[in-house]
Length: 322
View 1 (cartoon, rainbow, N blue to C red):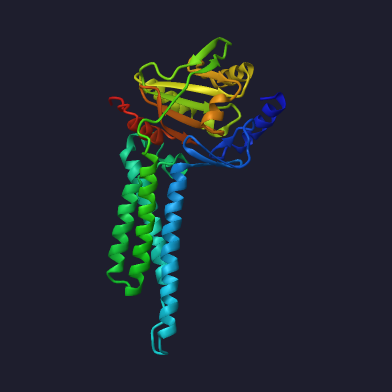
View 2: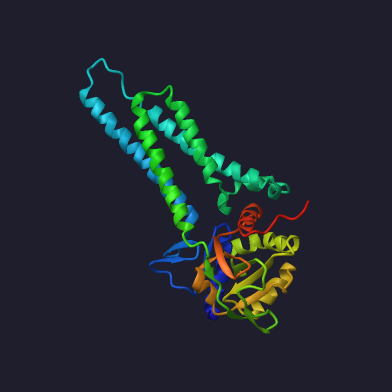
């Protein structure tokens, strides 16, 4: 990355509230599928979020479209004494089902990893970590819809039921597609350097599960999640955590580590951004690598302690003893 681009990238630190930052050295045109995200121009969309949004939009549109069609047909054949169609009531029920689905999905995730929120429960309100339990949310949405439809007009049953079926089917189909490659993708060896300039090779594995975090000093979300990763490295001796800087010089990285009081032993430098070019241009991106050197999952955006615990559990890393 040129010096001018580095200055421009560091100027973007004011965008620290953003969930991800896009590395300027990578091409920004067109749609690209990399790692766990869909990249469209300068925007990065994690597949889990894309899948959830598609399922919700499909359910919403199906329910609304079928209800509108049924209401029009009923209006054509209705006489003057027929009761008016309760459009606001149906819309209210749609919002209730949607809101309850999302709320229960978030709360179920929070309960599963409640130990991670013990020190800062207000962080539960920050949904940018992508922590959800979709199955719990789907069950809650169906249960509430079925309960309400018992006492609702008969004309609501088909559109709402069809919407829920479409959304649920789409979500499960996408989830199964994401599991189609159970062996993951290999993390190929990569030449890197340490902050003091020593050459190293990023190995696929040393026999331990590994978390590889792609970051830069100008990236606000990267800085926000660093304490979470450092805490995981301290609490899980059976886990290796590597922080691979993307596109910055050793001088910039050393200055950042010194100002932040961070240990350099887990920090490596990928000055040409090759790892980011392979796995996605959004920062931060975190790769979860099993003991065989296979990338089993990726996460785009800042990790919370709870979302990291969820990923580590899927990787087979047991929680530390209390």
